[in-house]
Amino acid sequence: MDSNFDFNYEEIVDYSYDNNSINNNSLTEEISFKVHTTCFTEVMCLLLLVVNVIIFLLGIGGNGVVIWIAGFRMKKSVNTTWYLSLAVSDFIFCSFLPFNIAYSVTSDWIFGLFMCKFTSFVMFLNMFSSIFLLVIISVDRCIAVIFPVWAQNHRSVGKASFIIVLAWFVSAALSVPSMVYRDVQHHLGIGRCMNNYTSSPYTHEIIAMSRFVFGFVIPFLLIIVCYTVIILRLKASQIAKSSKPFKIMTSLIVTFFLCWAPYHAFVLIEIYKSSLSNDIKTNGLRIGTTVAAANSFLNPVLYVFMGSDFRKKFKSSVFSKIENAIGEEGRTMSRYLSRSSSVDAKASTHI
Image (tube, rainbow, N blue to C red; front, side, top):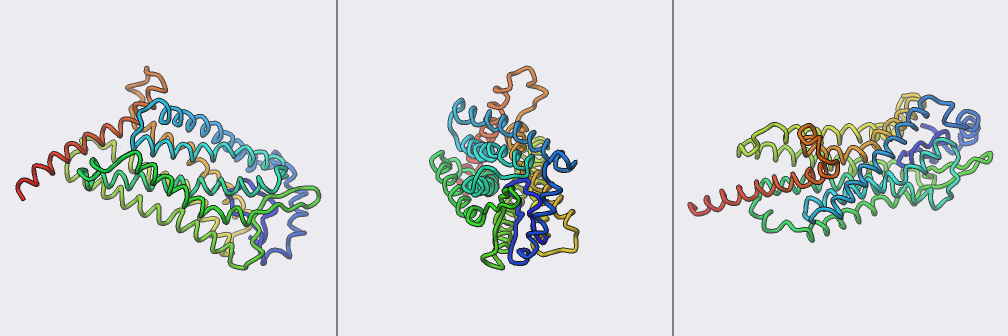
């Protein structure tokens, strides 16, 4: 689209202006001032505002409970380390949503240049760290299934913590451009927090493509490969006696794709100047961003709550359900590792 002064629903959205749009800024800002003075005058904006408030409340509540249980109530293990880091990433993301909720209501950025840059950095930090953690969990499960003896002897909380720190470091490095190119522009007394790519004609395309490749394509392919290997291995060994693990794995893959595909698709559409109207692009980015944000409260559901049968344990406390769910995968993995280790040990005596 030519310019994106008219709306900034989320900091994660790639609304921007560049060398191709700088000549149209005055006209777009004038239209923006007249049309988007408040979110409550637009049905789409109001609907997405309500959805984001729900995401904030569920995300803070769900991830907060997971952090408390995995971090303080349960014995530290590799699995709880994964869950804890994932919950922290999503909790941080959700804790910054009020800035964008306020921005969408007033259409005026009042939090200053530093918060404009920092909130954008945090949003993409969550995007990369959350996705990288999902890949790490997938790879960890895959290794445990393929090399059970090695996994039982070498998986440790210390190594898991080191991998998580490394993932956060890489995520921070990939998120720096979102902070560098973020800027606050003022017009007619209204401040707008947006991307400023006027310094280079190809900066926008490079950054967007790097996010698409490293934040979606590669992680998604890795997750697909890992869960395909896991499913084939479990079927071959006939260890999985029910279809529940396969349903959970399928839901993880599908949810990951559905949450992030719309956002990346409309960012690419915006960059390559498709024939779609500006309204379709703008609304597509709004919806895509909201769906991506929803992943932050869906993660506790998919990675924790689906691990136990709610109907059978309905009478137990919520905290007990979550604690049992987090520990369930660890107990299942331990049984699998023990059984596989025993089989491998027996097999080795015949070689």
